[in-house]
Image (cartoon, rainbow, N blue to C red; front, side, top):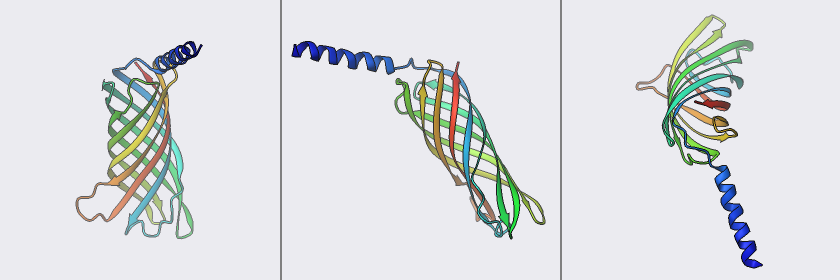
Length: 188
């Protein structure tokens, strides 16, 4: 009886682990996301800008998985924020383009954690009292994420990234965007 229970338990574990595996996908994928962004600023022109509210936005991304462990991804993200400058409300618009390398840590399971490294370039438009100020931003981003494949070609996930400003000389202005994004992707 003990042996039978042991065989049933081991068989159940084997069947469950096989059911949780997904076929390793290589090829193109596309997705949509809802990022929740936090912005930090500094510099002479932005000295009077008080803390910028966190806000959610919109993101679209696509990539190519060269191997089950390695993908190259392109993305676009936008979000609109509110802030205060000397007591008056101002608008802050963020538009960012990214190119990312995504490394999967467990590529053959339905739950796939990954690391993300990105190079980002974008523009922040801030409506100040004396006119609009446009600031070009570039950053190195680092992040972690988790995707869940609920169908063989469809995944849902979350990723957390933080930006590190690229400034090779002393920057007069800087804007850093950190993001928590929920997303869904289709893998062709």
